[in-house]
Image 1 (cartoon, rainbow, N blue to C red):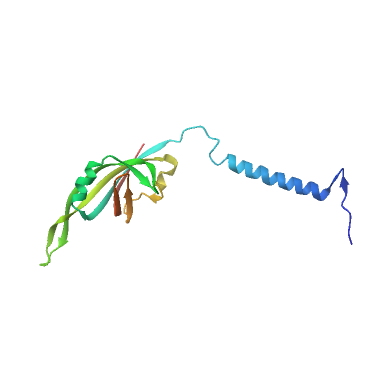
Image 2: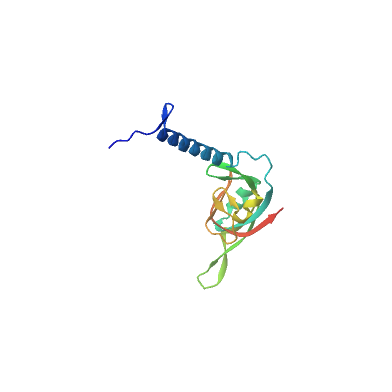
Length: 162
């Protein structure tokens, strides 16, 4: 049994409902796109984040090579991410000797890199550099700049400044 839909001009009621639904979807999608951050003109307040990454047991000559390239802009995924490695300090690296005593390994050192970056104040609780979170105690941190790359570092200090 086929029933004819009521006609309104050249449209029937089913056509009108379909057009209204399509328009509603388009308006909803447009509103989502407009509120995704493109319409705001106010500047986002930024917080300066300074953090220290410890790299243990790296070759001793790495210290001098790193000094030559400081300050060095931070990178992630092949792009600059804002911020830089500001400084590097070295301390002796100790290993357990054959007699069970700790002895200094002259071929290796422990380096402490100080880096700074700016992060939106609203996102300070999840501070990120590239895709990596910056949190005290984070291990296997990759500190990467234009000239320096340290794998397996540990973040030992984080300071947030207004």
